[in-house]
Image 1 (cartoon, rainbow, N blue to C red):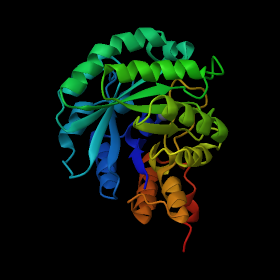
Image 2: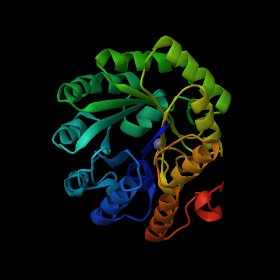
Image 3: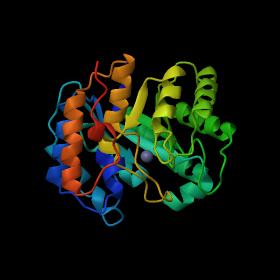
Length: 296
Ligand code: ZN
């Protein structure tokens, strides 16, 4: 069994030219939670003027229904973002992200990696003390469009930093699609050897067509938590030519065909992907929404 964290409502919509209304964004989340998706990254606590696509995090959380077994997560990149997130009762999980690459992190938040980590350490502790779950991401873990290769040592040091703050989940993000399956196996094995029992998630973008291959390498290395977005929505405003996340329905289709349970309604996902496509009025990258699922 694998668990999918649907990130379309956040990672996906944040780079869309079309700004969806609060009600539409809530509807996407509700459709997804009704299909068996247990975790959804719904909002981002950035300034509204910086990213109008993500405006209104508080309103979204206010409007979302409490669904038994479904967890809502939000992305926090700063202490002020954390202050907003901690007020929201229905937000049960906080995702923080810092890039392993200084160059990427400086473009993203205007500070070096260690400066950002240091500034986030008290807010992360505060979130854990308040009873929220925290998932801490090492972004650009598999490579950086500006710096190139990222030393494994740096990724391990960041994980150690996060784990020293408390009981955080850890995610590795391939922010600009530079990972390959062999590298995924190697890094996951190094991490699980060094930090046994770590709660590890993987977040891939399909920028160079290796998204599902990288997920499969992760599954074979023992990882069971993956991020994906409906229809393959997504990108990153600071990542050159970024394309979407691994597509949720393509990932569920692969797992179902291989006999790996996801607990998610694939036909319903396809219908929802088509509905989202219609809302955004442009073609999405998902393939199974066009070809249909593998039968039998
Ligand atoms: Zn991403």
